[in-house]
Image 1 (cartoon, rainbow, N blue to C red):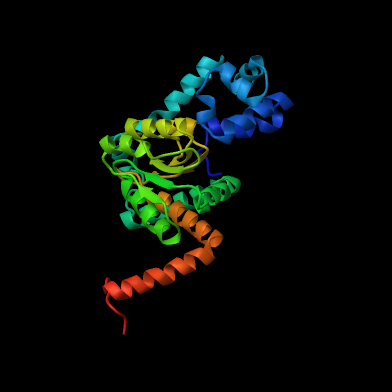
Image 2: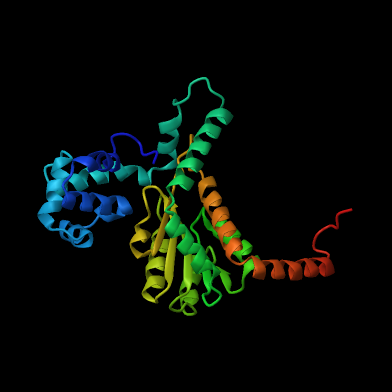
Length: 290
């Protein structure tokens, strides 16, 4: 799983073999969509995990916390990195690789991020998402924030080759309410939101979900607050030795999803590609190869 040592997530995984059946049930639930699953109250966690509230409290006490408030305080401190500014990110990495060329340690971190991201994506969730994207009865919307809008735009552009009814939402939040007018139950919204999470994106996801839209959230490993409204959440590892996070893992996940949709819709996709190539030829959009 490539989870950093001494984190709460690591503590939960390490404790699993020593827990009672009920405690293991809670821990498994918590790890299922960490950290979103542990941000609620004791009662909400117990209800979702199918156990009693005292069982949840006993679990966190076994991890070394006085009680659930203490456990959540530790989690919030751990998650403080989610709002790290570019200045803080730079300071964190500035002296991490003395003497090494930036290309070398950036490449090492990028490869680690890609491996961690793609290996941790739940395959059942991935397959269900490609199924949603392949369903011609569903309109697909893509939504990104300040930095992730370009990925949402690319995703929509590529999907349009394989199917119709794909809409990329504008980068201007003041246009989103009108888009909501056309969203209906069963449509799909692919939303991108990474730290520092954007309230406008979170609110748009919430409003779309209220209309019966299925939400697929692509986020970072600390998980956007929008995850509470998502049918499928796919976390990516984005830390890099830079003042800015790396969006490459998000793009890799998008390309994998596109490959999955292509596999499901190859007959329709190949037919659309033939028609598109004919239109390219007629419009002379691209230079003809010799």
